[in-house]
Image (cartoon, rainbow, N blue to C red):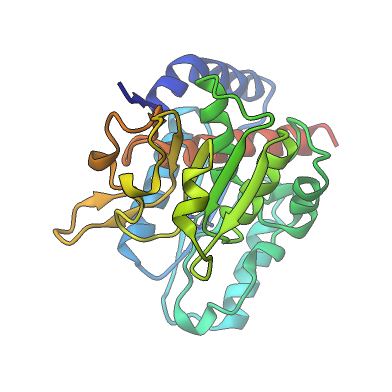
Length: 288
Ligand code: GUN
């Protein structure tokens, strides 16, 4: 039987602690406060930001979504980012991606002070990921952090294991490869130009699909032993417009040891880690 690795299970064990940490900080007079900059009305981004706001408010934190018009100029956006991120009452800030085409060249993650970069995209925060020199006060990128947390929660062994990550993005594939490396895994990053992908995935203990292609990974990519762990980072729509991951989960049933579902797997862990990063940022700023 294939085990389902769910965020719900993770939360049932860990959410009470996060709630208590929020409550303790609020009692000391600091309400963790996040501002999310949303440019335009990309429907997926509107839903993601709403879910993030809801989660943080449920913990007792504050979250404002700053809606800026699709047509905003680069200069105005930069002014907004600067004004918001320099406010002492705001502990965390990020710009929801993707940005409209005329702004998509901007590396906005670098424009938010590293101490408030709850996305974990700033070069200074990524440097800690690179060196492996990080602890619970470091702002780690949310999705990679969430993947490692989920696997650890289910006691999936990482040390000495072969991990194949399909996808080399700055948000997931690259930083995740470094977090696995810090856990003493051996990592192969694959992408659209990789040769013999199936040979590589068959040889892996853990396969992470982070490519953004609906139902890309199916049972043909697995070995015959049924002992592999599959992590699905994808959030896509299938041909019928239904939410689906990068993994054809149906075809994997009973052919792997464990798998993260979509929805209910990595997605909610990203939001959980964002809320955790906000707490870290608020605590770090308070203790400065
Ligand atoms: N768009 C999709 N995922 C993310 C994320 O983790 N952070 C930001 N800022 N935008 C996103």
